[in-house]
Image 1: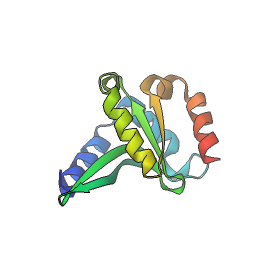
Image 2: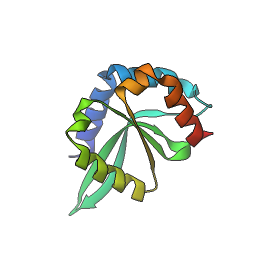
Image 3: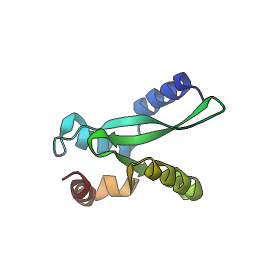
Image 4: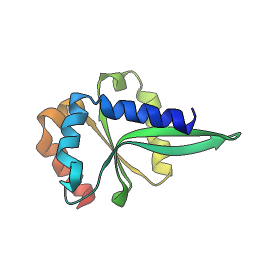
Length: 121
């Protein structure tokens, strides 16, 4: 997929957040969490094969700590292997990846916040 297409997709995802993504964003936007800046639907180029670049879109990204936060809905139960491969690639690139389930973000924010503070603090 070309960069212009992946950029359009990222913009669409920003406009159509899940309730859990929206909740997370409200808690971290404008440097609200430990004065750290987060971006949402952040594009990461992970490879280039025969001149074609490949990208991932991270749900949320904190550049200061190379931290990617993924908010997982039910679809992730069907793509466990893909998520593992993707996470392995991102870790090899030097990123830290945290995954939270929708319900954790919506119903257990204190736990999510504590885990984030461990990494960001």
